[in-house]
Length: 441
Image 1 (tube, one colour):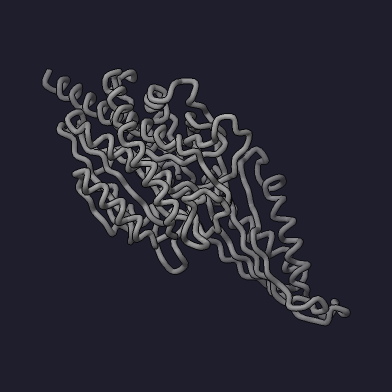
Image 2: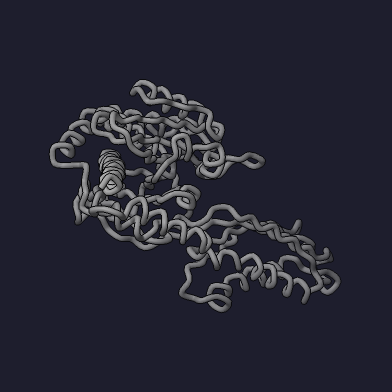
């Protein structure tokens, strides 16, 4: 996120969200009670939907049955529904009885290529595919929010756009997908979206809690493939070859020095090599090594510098050995940014719904999320939803074959989203009324 975008955010949020009474709330005690009642009325169906999604996970850009289910549910609620966005994405538009702007909720739908090891009755029926990142929760929460708020049309000043996104985990090779493609296909326009909300299940927080971080909340994510080209020789005569494996070990070691010696060590930065292949036999000097890695940081300016730093390190080491190399560096996801002023505006609404003791500030995370693409264009608030069962010391992490979030968190997520979008719309409507009154005077 460049300096121009920071400035744009500040101006946009100041104009859109921070003019007017910060205490304004659309969700009074009567409305809050009605929301709770609607959630409870739909709770069994929402849990049923979640379990169906968990049993029938689908990989990125292949969420065909998931999309059908989502579209059918939204249509039955009376929403205006558009399918086939960014291949398998679904967008539902809930129009309130009162005029006003549009805010959005985003949920991702895709699963991971993970073989589930849980044993509960609704475990995955698709071999090698599992909702190991909680996207079945995200989809169910967004659908549940639509179920609840469709009963509050007479109170809604504006529109709520429900964005069900495919391929958050990344499109298959050779394909496009995810948030970036949805945006390019117009998901934030017609009608234009004023602000967007998203969440992610979080096993470090207990059920009932929500975590947030102002500023950079989740890291950028870039990847690289490095090929080191040496010269083959007999293992007993290494001086006649150029050992690509030895060179690779030096490269890997020196890449770890970037964060401690070449950049400010207080900066959040991770460079990890997750895959390495080289050599054909124990007594042959390897002539080629291919390694794949990931780079994560919370600092966009540092992100821009890393490819050049890696290149210089690799070039220096390879030159010393007489080897050559090829570095293919791919920029993928920007960091997720919760603008501090926007956080300040929406935090009271989250606190109102969950209770002050349950809304906690957390450290920024070096995992990544393509929700970041929305946050580079409009005010966005992304938070973490606790899914650890009460009394449970630890729980399986995200992407684990044993990941098993507590389903009680689903209704908590729905409640939080209902409060956030209703309050955001009400504040916008109030600001418009104030502006019109001032203009007429």
